[in-house]
Amino acid sequence: MNRVPLIAAGAIRQRREFDRPRLEECPRALANLAEVRLRGDPVENGQYANAATELAFVERRIAELEGKLAAAQVVYPRKSDARGRAEFGATVALREEETGREAAYQMVGEGEADISAGRLSVHSPLGSALIEARAGDGVTVDAPAGEQRYEVVAVRYD
Image (cartoon, rainbow, N blue to C red; front, side):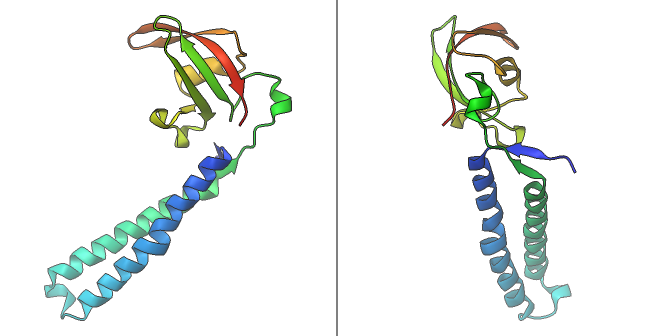
């Protein structure tokens, strides 16, 4: 089984995402199916088919999330080993050279990346360019809009 690296916060988010369908949606879908079953012959009952489809969807989602949890490997970044370099789990503050715009991103695994939440995949073009960068380094990324240059302002491990 291929292990999927996650930061600790990503593992917590994944567990919460798993708990919702398992503890809330599945019991609700089962109760709905039982209630509809009491209304008559399932073959002639369109509501029964809908309830059974809903339950199957929830069960597939639970199985998918169980697989993700089984493959998850929580990685705790070790500040001392990184020696100021950007590694998995680091938060990297950047300044775009052309615009001067600054942003900070936490380097995470592919499954937990969300650029709008400040989580950047280490496998993305920018994430790959940042691996092992230190404060003061410049990095260049080939983007669809052309080459973009960034200065690493800071690397920290929160």
